[in-house]
Length: 349
Image 1: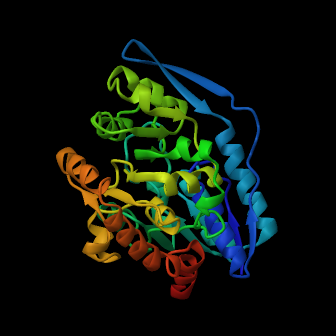
Image 2: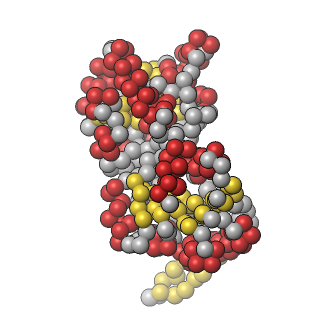
């Protein structure tokens, strides 16, 4: 099949992971070019009850959507595979469905009706035109059922890329690198800058004062220092490469896995990525995790006191850590690659 993807700059990289999976499955894929015209703010002023109301409009949005349709007309894909946050107008999705006449799939990465100003403001209105909606968070199903009654919703948690996440040969790692990544607790991920969304991760990590905590992420973590002073000593620097992540997951005693606070009952693919390296992880509690793993073969936490107790216990019990990492590795390695999970989706088609 010919499968087209809109450009998506999200740092999580799920779109590229899905494209790679499709390539491995033998499909012909196309990553559409980003519309790269300069962003020009068109200011429209109008009088409203004596006040001057200012509307800032990115005039390149229309050009981006038109250019995307133009590319699809040339490519003639069988499937258009989108991810929320691509900035497509609802009209654009409708045109793709009716005129390009291809199956439209969307991976939902955020609550479609999240009020955060940086979220895709068009996405919720475009749900009505999708054929398939891949949803990792069952709580969002209420929104999807009401806004996309004709779309088929598939529970989908993503996967890991075997070429990026695999076992590390610890014997060839230098002493300096071992020292760099060794700690009681590690965390790697987005700070969400100054958004209240970032308080969740920072607030949890900022209360682990009794442990050696190391954090890698974006520079926005420095914003949190004023609220949680211990984070200043924990923050190590910017995001890690895949090679560095593999070493961190291997040498950190505990990899703390905290998804976005938008996620209530689900989890993010980082669970699979850490498991594929045989890293030990303590995960923010998720009901859906227990539909995949046996309750004796993973560790989750409910509340900060529970987390502290489990960190204290597992940092002293290597044998139990190894038993759990072995069980999670065995469960993940043959089932939860992106390739296997995308193959399951196409099997439903």
